[in-house]
Length: 154
Image (cartoon, rainbow, N blue to C red; front, side):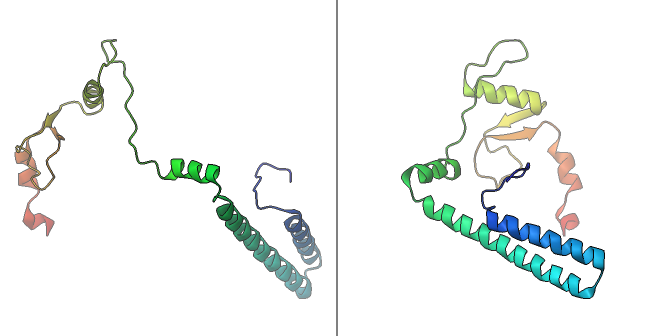
């Protein structure tokens, strides 16, 4: 099959049905008769059913063949990889390279969230969040408390 959209489930049977469907459409378009339009609808419906069947068969065949060790291990690596990516070293604004993950995180924080401070104690206004390092913006939480109240939320 030529063209820019090659799909693995396409086959010669589909190609023949596509041609048949197009011919039925052109005949119906030229004649305008209801009988030809009905014939076109029948052929088009049969073509669509065949496309669905070929897609389904291809998918079932693909899933069946994945049971091989090589493909299933590759899928496991793609879908089941839960390890987090490691941060690489970054160039800081002063031209030096970061030397540790902590420096990378600090550099990213300063670049993308200027004015924020890292809080790791019980001083956070967000008490229901589990204890972790959190980034709290430097603006006053008193303003937020005065603007967002329980009455306004309800």
